[in-house]
Length: 263
Picture 1 (tube, rainbow, N blue to C red):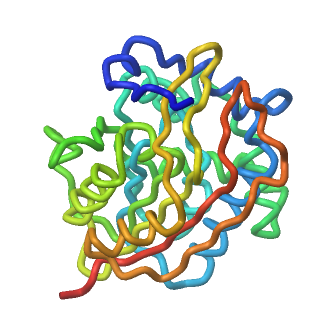
Picture 2: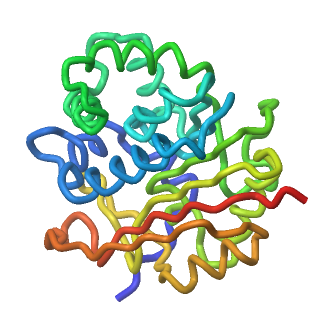
């Protein structure tokens, strides 16, 4: 049985960032703190330490209330712009950037990245560096031709997104259109890195059920090619940790790195 498509207004009315954090990223209860986070953070670490992906500006598209995809990026980009559709998610990011009491605790994840980098003692310094490097938190909408309207956005050296596009996109065509619309925000030769789930139909945030675009590896690669990107690398791993069916039903995770052609 499929899950009815979740419209934007439902997210505005019913998506609770605190439930999201507790469901997926809380250090004791979160269901994505194992296999998914290790996969995603290792991929970003390897990508940004290889020397080929760096520059002045990185954009994080559809961050939710999270900052974890940016921990490695702050080492190789001078300015980071993060974004999300929901005001309540952007407010949570701003709280963390201000180091407010009550902000979500990302310390265990920052510590993991520091260990990947071979310096487990630099967690606080890493957090301070990331707070300095994130210069803007803006609204985005994957379904708009200009997804950052009305903000004026520079072209970036790299755009990343984790666990985002499968939520607003109703079908592979809208997924492809979203990729095509993001391309204008990349410099010629710029990089795009997307990480998410394959063959998932729904996910829960607390007690609320949201739809997820069911996309296969073949659909994913076809979408990037049709949107005009040159694929650099695709990596897929199966979910060996059995998904809790009251949380989501993905069967694998993907990483895709592509580039906007130079001409």
